[in-house]
Image (cartoon, rainbow, N blue to C red; front, side):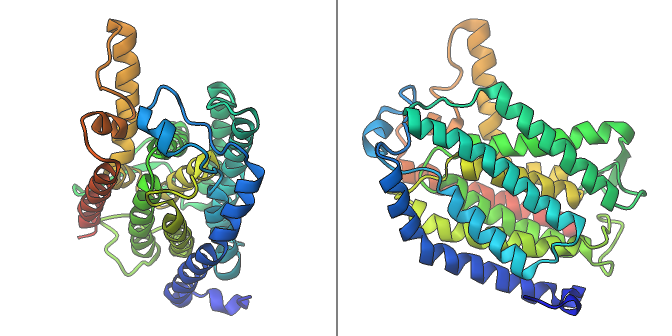
Length: 348
């Protein structure tokens, strides 16, 4: 365990490296054992939705779920060892991982137990998500300088808007929206995990930029102690990368709601902490597209009785167009990588 003096800002890059390596190594070492354990517990594996691509019913049947446990446990352990857990930003991130992870775990457990693709109701999940997000936003606001606490920063143009009391509900929507967006994207082998590796890596860079006052404060705000979030991002990147080894096609395990809800939520929390909510939409453009595609599909169907996309979320639409699963995944990874480069340009 690190002594208190080792939490000085100058140690953050090294601690971030250690957190990444440890989470990655633990994931690779323990992944196989977790898969064997879950296979023994989950006789039928994750139930496959019958209204999804028909090929999935055959190819993915019997694959165990709750793989998010691998990411969450390895990441949290790395954070406990290498991040300053006494800081508000760090412990609230860990708490969000636990609360959303527990919610997803409960949902996955019922799905496997009853062999149904639908477990917890949408209202129940949204209620838990919003309550946890409200707590997180208030803790973050209390630890953020008053001068920028309720401001929304627009990248590239050096603009900012004072949202006042509107900022709290806005930030709550960012966190819960990110959680559900990642959840919707977790539908193909390696898709969500690969994109999360890229996005968490980008936000690690933003954590360094936002947390050190030596950077140009006119381009983005300086948030004291937010550089510590680089360690959190590094741990999550390592955990997701290690999980990806077992999740790439043909997946030996699925992330499940256990992982997707929690990882999406903490991604939203990180964006709110760093005051880069708009950047999250830029870097996570695929997550946004997945969510918007579902909204369009539902609204269009209610109005016309027809489908706007062949299938939603949009990754299934491309499958229905004849794209292979691997092509869809790699294309979406590439789009995320390109969007990340665009996001990083805001630092210039």
